[in-house]
Image (cartoon, rainbow, N blue to C red; front, side):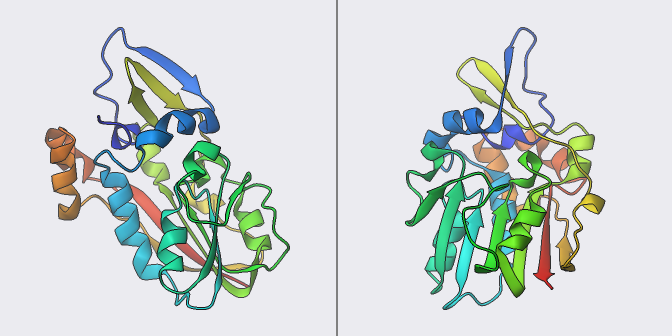
Length: 231
């Protein structure tokens, strides 16, 4: 089923008469949790190949994977020798995350200040765009914060955070913001990449039955990945 990429491209697949239900993120991700990693998902593929080159050496480091979902980045870091903790506000998403896993809102992380050497927030800022200050709080001076999300320009162009669940279209509540707002005292932006879909994602579009939308989707940045150093 076309579940997650449809959530982030213009919803031309929404038909007249479709029932559209708007849900808060936590409720929406409860519905998505069972099949989140199973359906072809070019957006996740693009995010993962774009963020990975910006990761520092994590061996022996403490890592917080905030808005972790099923804990992809926590697992990635653990395999490279880190002590990583997956954090998410959706219990159903965390069930298959690596342990330790913590149920918490990323606006109020249950960690002391300056706890982590690396803090990651993948595809979560649209639900909490003001959480950057909290990510900074739990990161030690000299540590790194990495965040990715659907590109604000794509949202302005009509891309939506929706997915189909049975006969319903689920519209996920989110907050609009600009990249200019992702600045904060005590942070130094050291990298910003704004990739579009490319050839590595073409086959995933095809698998999802949306190859006819691939060219359109490549015409603008789909996501961004930002890297800050905590001063």
